[in-house]
Length: 293
Image 1 (spheres, rainbow, N blue to C red):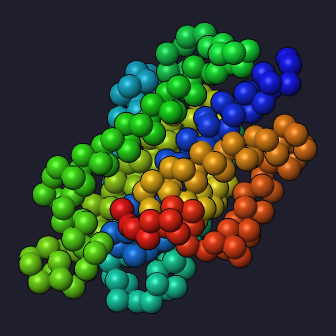
Image 2: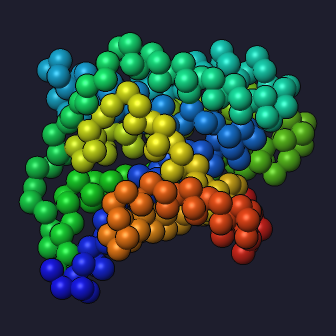
């Protein structure tokens, strides 16, 4: 493979990897904008969704049925988390709420270990087609599904925010929580909906990447950390920044792994996080626009 083909391969692979981070960051940012809470258990939704889909598929369900059931179950887990752990402590400080989500994350990971053990699980490729060859670079066909899920999620979020009553209620709550309550908008219902949606989105992300990465009980920790870095990189309040941050982080990781060492790949996220917090803590997009959602 020639040099320009190798660089193009890094970019394509980085965009596929970054799409996964972007989905997780999107769920983090959406939840944070609505509730003001950084949900550090978001990565566990990814793992639970992926493992649940594997279990349904092994039980004989079709892949689409396993996908839908796993997304629904993980959305319910997100709703239970909000009702049982977040809502009772809604008047606590933001730091206390973050610590609660870390505790929930540990509990969910331990539960996943008890249910599924330490063995990796797999799903077949969604379409089973051959890889695409573009200018000498190879694109895995499952990567196209991952990119498609990002486009679907962003489009769905845009339509929800701009075209529906509940979307406008969310925007009102983001702009002024007290004012929204004065006009009859219940932020606690929106908080519940945010966790349900983040559970569903995390599950969808976990399922779509399983044919590439396999699913294990502890896969959510690293993915959740990368999603958090992507959200901080783009701006913790910016949906567009979450997408851009995820894609940028994925490309940087692939270049780091390809040009330096594969062992350097995971270190890139931490280096990026430290640099962003030191140089531009408000993130790339937020620093430019100053806007949220």
